[in-house]
Amino acid sequence: MKTREIAEILSAEMLTEDNPAIDIRSACGSDMMSDVLAFVKDQTVLVTGLTNPHVIRTAEMLDVSCIVFCRGKRPDEEMLEMARERDIVVLSTRHTMYVACGLLYTHGIVGCESTRR
Amino acid sequence: MADVSILETFDVERGAFETAGEASATIKRTLKRLGVDVGILRRVAVATYEVELNLIIHSLGGRLELAVDENWVRVTSRDRGPGIPDIDKAMTEGYSTAPEDVRTLGFGAGMGLPNMKRNADDFSIASEVGVGTTICMGFKLR
Ligand SMILES: Nc1ncnc2c1ncn2[C@@H]1O[C@H](COP(=O)(O)OP(=O)(O)O)[C@@H](O)[C@H]1O
Ligand SMILES: [Mg+2]
Image (cartoon, rainbow over the protein chains, first blue to last red):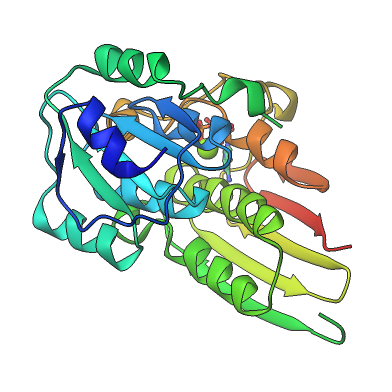
């Protein structure tokens, strides 16, 4: 699924430039980066309510190319710049994490647990 | 990848959250430049990030070392203490002594050591209380 579609499904604002090359298959929703590091696999969108630079670092390690900040959270400009440098697309939605993940799930985006190594 | 031999070291200080992940990101970039497969690259990056975070959160400071030959990527972490009293307990998913402020940052779920072991093809840990902890992780290139 394209990041553009994810933005539409979540009524989300895109805070960086889009990258049409990204193809998302699965999602991981958590505020615990430790859990994210244990579960994320390939072509995953990260849904989180945590806004600190470690979120971008964690995404970088995992090759996560799209992050959705939920509950209306917005990363500051420094974080957005970090994301741009790493070619990560950043979205912000007003939905809670539960609803954001539910919406993605009903549109065919699966969870990460099935792909855990 | 033939005949490649690389050695890089990174000092990681206790409490250095500002720069957390820089060593791991540098290692990831080095390996990417060498043409390491993306799947292996991600496993190395995740395991290295976990071990780097542990140096920052739990150790008194230490050093990461990257070594690459034609068959293996090896990442070694050595620290100056305090050491781990019960390694079996530390290796259990969910066990963490991380303080509350670390949890607020999104870490300290007690998944790090098991995650390193899962991602590496070869994993060993040795620790002595009052001396330090050494963790060796190997990733097979072929
Ligand atoms: N380098 C280290 N020095 C001392 N203790 C450590 C070190 N690495 C890990 N530990 C201990 O092992 C526990 C489990 O580590 P880990 O699985 O990475 O979980 P977390 O970092 O989330 O606590 C830590 O909470 C800590 O008590
Ligand atoms: Mg840890």
